[in-house]
Length: 118
Length: 109
Image (cartoon, rainbow over all chains, first blue to last red; front, top):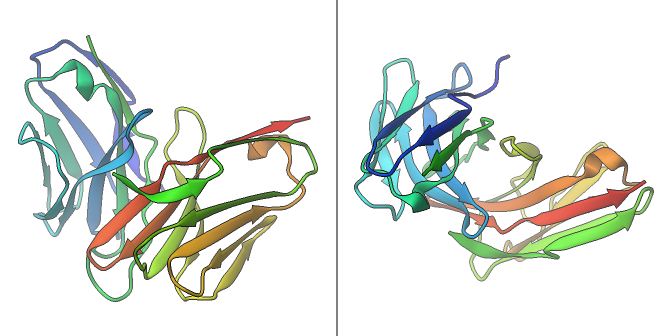
């Protein structure tokens, strides 16, 4: 069974540009959530999508957005890039809503997209 | 952000030694998870715990869900060089999930 796939693995952008990252969840998983990982802040939750709807959102500015398609694949977009956006962006999928339901299903992470903003 | 207290921050041990790390919180969680992350890779799920007091093993790894539901422990027995990496705990409840800052493990051959 294929794991969570994120593309691209590495990305270099300049300030002011925008970027789109892609995530394909494990087959059958309907929830996709996104995280930003930096050495200083660790893992921080960005947002979660389930059935093409954003279900929960972390404390990030509106420059960070996402969407989910009918096949559960998800994209994350960051507009007007800033130097501080340099980070490893991780996507994770799970069977059910990470943030809901009585039976929490664990997250399975992809290998991430390393974004460098210069 | 990180709202779980994970300790120690780092460990340097000899191959063959046992390792213990833990996570504590001021809040109750329904699920505790332990992940390992290698450099340049995403976290990989090691153990998931769903019930207070539960003790679960995965090979040389053993984790426990604290009886108060506010803590969890991970033990690695007879460490080997490939155990090197960063270990993260995560606490999950219906509308919230938080991560520890990680324990960086170095194993000397």
